[in-house]
Amino acid sequence: MILVKFIKNHTPYLAGETAGFSDTQVKRLEKIGVAVRVGGAEMDKSMVPNRDYVTKPASGSVTKIPEDWRSLHHFQRIKLAESLVGRKVGKAAEADDILAKAGSEE
Image 1 (cartoon, rainbow, N blue to C red):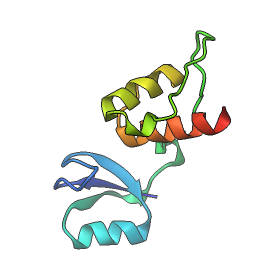
Image 2 (image 1 turned 90 degrees about the horizontal axis):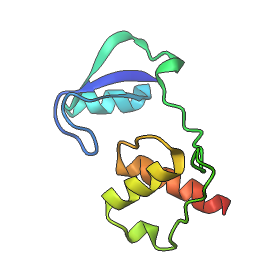
Image 3 (image 1 turned 60 degrees about the vertical axis):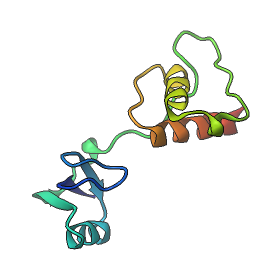
């Protein structure tokens, strides 16, 4: 993965945010003028977030995921995901990943 910094808003990223992409994706982002490489080296694996989500809160109680969770407002989906993993969830896409994984395990 190669780390880039967005210099223009490019959904879902805002100018100033960083993210890691494959070389092909980085070339495309550079070509359209929305991102630049950060440094010259590839990302260290420790920089990649862990996607092994915990689906039960630390308290031991179980959070019920409504069947229509996909139709909830993104703020509601984020709060629901946070109650599942016991930590802050930053974006709706991350919340959707957590909820989909948790829903498939029920």
